[in-house]
Length: 93
Image (cartoon, rainbow, N blue to C red; front, side, top):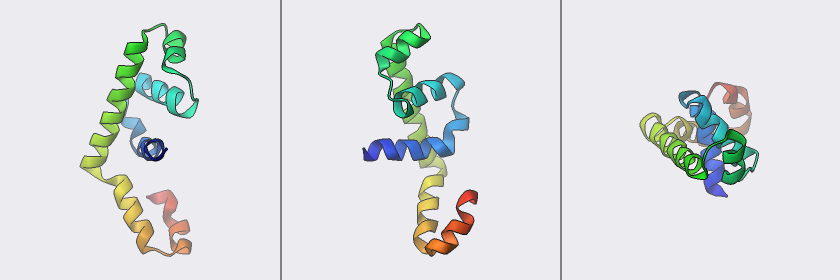
């Protein structure tokens, strides 16, 4: 479960760097809880293609975070600020 939350958080930051197809498969799998078989059927492709794309998206999200540290920086700022201060700026980080 922690992996899903972490990937979802990364997705919030880096989704615009993914292709439409990558976003669609990721959202179908992680947010809409579709199986890879269902995604494949809905998009008229193989299950292997869906699996490969989801793995690719996970790798890209981790790569982006390793390079840019946006989520890490947000969490560090959140630790420093009081809850009230964080609420005031959370839409900006």
